[in-house]
Image (tube, rainbow, N blue to C red; front, top):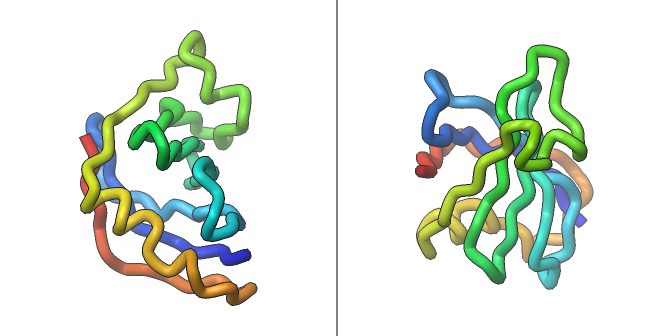
Length: 104
């Protein structure tokens, strides 16, 4: 399993944010990402990401509910590749990725 950081910006965000991609196996089709103010669930099979709205005290799993303002975005093949790049490496350390992925 790996933990990696990606710099992402989604539609409606003013600035890029560093998101942690939580440990997942290369075979997992769903995994979580989280920044200081947002949480998201990436579904590789549906090619979608479900993203919470920003919460100043942090976002948690229940914030992915649409009733709490979560939105979904369709992902292109290039965006999916950028999000999953490096998952085949089974290292256990954090590795920063300085590329910015714009979604939405």
